[in-house]
Image 1 (tube, rainbow, N blue to C red):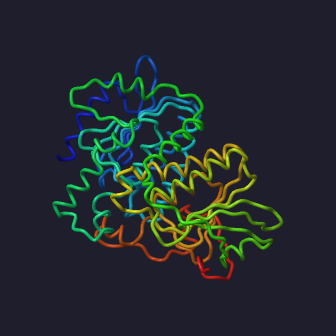
Image 2: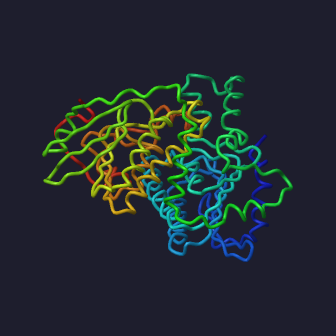
Image 3: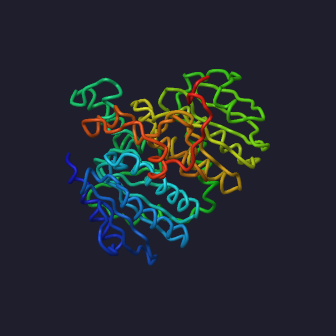
Length: 419
């Protein structure tokens, strides 16, 4: 089934909401207005016209402005997404633009504005994160939604994307039917069906957004594989933490998830983070989110998020349970804590990139890169799987600053991530 097969859903959506474009399209993005059941709507349509619908800097800025309006007006928003995510060929610029876009998206989600998302053929990476800003999603019959596209999953698993068994496994894991089975908030549109009933439910007012999102977090635990036992907590010492916290610290770690408290410049702060060389899977992401949501019961004055994880896991086991939802949950938890008054910062200790970086950086007031750390849009192997070659090189802090992926640099005279 080709990409054109999703177009009848877009046509049906435009008719159902009486879509009227406002201004010219910016790359893959068209914004406009609509109405449904007498209610005015803001509308954003992302189509696969250029580079599989990927979002470059202009598109991200355009969508961010719309999210800001939606948050301010608490206006109903309908989004159509047919996109491979951030424009990887833009490198750091795309990552910085998506950081700002996702921050605006979190603002819209927490404003209480009703948001409904309809999906086209592709919804990968950052686009899948945007899709989960909404409580409900409507899939086309051939939609594929995941943090990683098939080419990246194949590359990470050492398989040939053309292998029939791999293709069958991927289709089964990423299919709309699998997504509906994982989450009842997902639904599938059948050609010829009216969208009226789905739109009425999707755009219904839901009360306090933070409470609803915390309930969504709780539901994610049931999907995790309970057969995998968590490793016990261990007290740890790290040279980077010793340098950061001149007044002392206490830290413990389990399976690459770190929590603790420290004192620097005479002020005490809590910290939590994702560390270690393993890509971030659903289980570790959920543990991080769970700790942050629980902090909301007694919000700390300051929270430093620590990151040394270059990317998310490109594994079918994680994608079967919708890895995107677990990564998005981290951003929701931090944004909810920030709305309670906690000052949140992010320090990149070693490597960072992709959706993991975006989820943690978007709610933060500032991002600090430790001297020698590496921020990238995706690891080189993933970039090569998408573009055919890796375009990433070791950037300077000035490049991080120019791309808005980091706001300040921390020089401690040590090699990042060393123990």
